[in-house]
Image 1 (cartoon, one colour):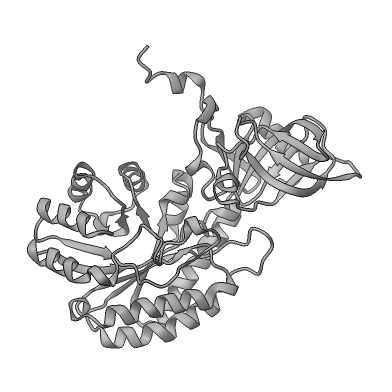
Image 2 (cartoon, one colour; image 1 turned 30 degrees about the vertical axis):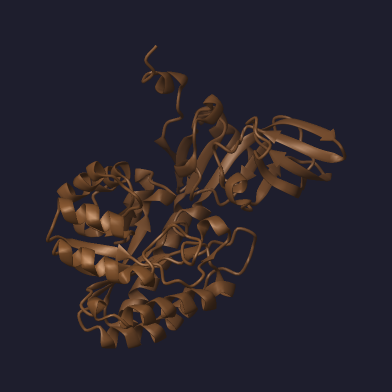
Length: 409
């Protein structure tokens, strides 16, 4: 899939832009997560389950591969729950990790028998009133600053909206007792996308949370400990996350905790982006070029509505232009949305493009399509899976009639 001809053929067949996923890369990442799970189980002699975060990419073709590797899923909306179920995941393989949901959504989860993780006392109160005497997990905020590539993906510390802090544990315990709820699990999640240089920060955060849990006898009988995810992907060529080092470091701190919490029977992790990210490429076309105010601009048909991460998080994605030019240019690469923030990359050295050249945006398999929108009336692209050099359409490109059918004229 590296030559221009194949991309041209796929764009002509399925439209531009286009999400393309490579199954061999997806398989490799699933295997790495499975190996990490198996090694932890051997080291700690406890069940470990990896719950792929469906929000990273919920295409059934990807979820079915995740299931083939014996991995589980977590979801956070009724649609994700239905998709997971249709892909064959059982209620014991699904964890509902939600945030600020209403009663109707809680009823949907309850009726499926899926275990829910609640992240505020208010949500525990609502669930307890509706379903007293049931099992729940609770998300705590260990108070330590989390890890992540952006402030917007850090999910621990004083500035995050997630979890219940130690100052409110007493009220949490009272609410749980009020409705005779069974707190069978504790969840903490520090943030997203940590690599080798942040393993120490991640381990420190885990250890801080474990120490906090150990201080309260109300947590002595928890059966499940969920340490979230955040396993990073190398977007800019950084050293990739070393799962062997991570497993060794985690085992040291978890062994002590497991020895003192004899009821604990399961560890959970929630790897999201790590599984599909590297497998995905967003392919489009150069639609315009200009040099204004000493800035060379490359316009494309890939807008922030197909890949919002650079605009939302100032995230980096490798970008390549396919042509035979011997010249290079430093350019700002932007999309076709009338927003100043619709920029895929700034000050990138790329081949000097012509209108019509193919452009590739790498590492678009996670939080690409799942965060895509129809802003300014743009259609969401098709998705194609490449397996053994054969393509398979796994989601059709939207049509205008798809979007107007629900409008009441």
